Image (cartoon, rainbow, N blue to C red; front, side, top):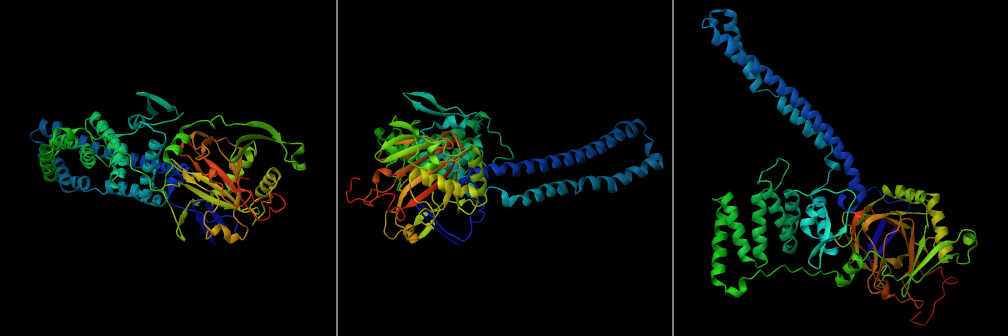
Length: 539
C-alpha cells in the first residue's frame, strides 16, 4: 500500500477498499474521543470495586480498634486483677505478638491498590497520550483565536467574546462543563513550553484565579498547584516585558515557598530591571499575537469563520436535473452560492441512512490526515482530522453515490478519472487552514494517476454541527455553513487548465459538534466530451 498526501488533499493507491485501522492521536478525531468514554466507564467500575474493597478493609480495622478499645476502657480499667486471669493475659500477648502485626503489616491495602493499577494498565493502550493532551489544549487555543473567545468565559463553560467593550455569547452549548485551576494550568503550560506567552498568560492567569478561589487546596488528581501556576505566569509576564507583574507574582510565590532560591534570584533580578528602566517603559506592554508562518490570510480566514451565514451571496435556487434522465422525476434542490468561483450547494443530496452508512464504512480506516513536506508526508497543526478512503467496491452505497455525482455534474467520476471517496472526521477544534484542492506544482503526486489535475471538488456534509466548521472561500470572501446531507460543488480549474486562485478555501475549526465530510475529487482526463477546454484564461 502507498498513500501520498499533500496540503491540497490525498491520493490513494491501494488494492483494498479502506486503509488499515488507525490507532493513537485521539485528539484529531472526535470519533476516537467518543470511544474514550467507554474506557473511562471501565475505569470507573474498577475504581468502585477498589473503594468497596478498601471500605471492607477499613471496616475490619475499625472493628479491631473497637474491640481493643473496649478491652482497655472496660476490662482492663474496670478490674485491676484482670491479668490474673490467664485467658485475659493470653489474649493480650497474642494480640501484641500477631494481631497488631497482621493489622499494621497487612498486604490487603497494597493488593487492592495493585488490582486497581493492573486494571488501569490493561486499558493503558486505549488511553490518551501526552500528545493528545497537548493537541486538545492547542485545539482550545485555536478556538480562542479564530472565534476571539474570552478565556475566563471559556473556563466557566461559556463561549463568549468581547464586542464593543461587553461580553456577548458566541454560542450557548446544550452541554458544557467549567474548567478547574488545574485544567487551565495545563492549557497554559502547553503554550508556555512552546514559548507561546501570548496564550500562556491568559490561561495561567485564569488558573491562578481559580486556585486562589479554592484556597490553594491541592487535590490528588491535580498535576499543578497554585505555586506552579504563579511560577509559570510570572516568567510568562517577564518574557512579554511585563516586569512589574512578574515581580508581584514572584513575591506572592515566596509567601508560599519562602526558601525557593531560584524565585529569590528572580525577584532580585526583576527589582534591578525596574530600577534601571525609565518610568515610561514600565507600562504594561500588552500581549502581541504571534504571526503564522503558514497562514498569510489569517484575518480574512478568521472573519469568514466567525460569519454564521454565506454572506448573503445566495444568487438563486432551483430544482436541477442537469438534463439527466436519472434526475428527471427527482430533481435536486440547487442553491447557487457564487458565480466566481462557481460554487453551488445541493440540498438533501443524500439521506440520513446513507450518511450513517458511509461513516460506518470509514470508521475502521481512519488515520491522521497529513500534508506534503517536500517529498515526504507530515502531520501538522494546520490540519487536524482523520481520513479514510473508500473504493466503489467497498459497498454498493459508494458506487451509488458516484453515479449520483456524475448525474449532477455531468462528469466522469469513475476511477482513475475520479479519486476514491475520502471520508474525514475532524478532531478537537478540528480544521484545515486555507489551501487549494488542485495541484499547484507539476511534480505533485496528483499527476501520478495520469489523469491530469483536479478539475472539480464535490464535498458532502455527512453530519451537522452546533457551531463552527464552515467552509470559507478566502479570496472570494464568503463562507458556507455546514448543513447535514447537503453537498457543495466547485470548479478548481479554469477551462484553460489553469488553477482558479479564487478557490482558496478552508475548513473552519469546529466550535461545537462532530463534523464529518466526504470528498470526491474529479480529474481533467475523462471529461473531454463533458467539460470542454478553452484557451480563454477567464473561462
